[in-house]
Length: 291
Image 1 (cartoon, rainbow, N blue to C red):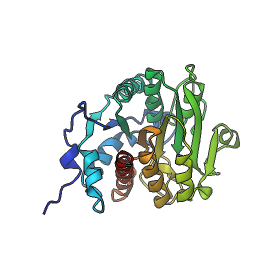
Image 2: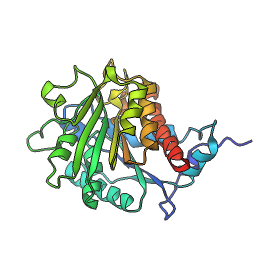
Image 3: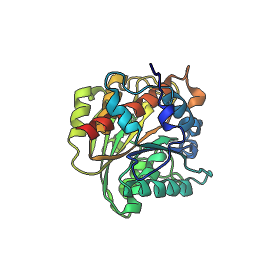
């Protein structure tokens, strides 16, 4: 009998020509600070890995999951200096390289400023991309004193001079978290109360071009260890269904999981939620590869 955990595949797993998926951390919460949120998300990548590495492959269908793990690299964390714009550019350069290799990056945040660095990977490739955000907020706020922050990434994408953001979908919005003017910015917005598991599946199935998906943990109902906790958000089952659907979709070329704040977590529950989100993305990729 064996009791192998994900750490057995992912610890010191290097990038090779056979790599299909790569984990990459972005331990930044400078954007959260600028946005007036609760600092601590910089510890997210380490906490997600700690929880993820204790998990097992899918016990019901282990072989496809193990096949993905055999072709998954953990690239550690992007160097973060506190200069958010430079750090986002550095993240984008690494994402661009992974996309060029045909690798699916799974980025571990960090605040939601991670998403803009994520997008810069497509800019570096000169490739158009649709943004799909699972979030309680629209995150289309203007810059503050000319500076980007965790509430501005999708405004930055839509306003980028390259014109490479082809559209913006956000699902999980809370009506008491979003200004009416901001709710009108996305190409498509879905309120949390209207987002069922089946609708999450249909939303992902409707994608028809390259897409980056981003999962902000504050969309989940009463998740304690996040930068901006809320009540009345998505049930965990709907959230994980969305994660697996994105992993399964060939249109989703990259994913990030953001806003875990381990300093404010309760018994590591939010870290487990973040890690389980990654686990479901990996299981979705396994289904993508096996058809």
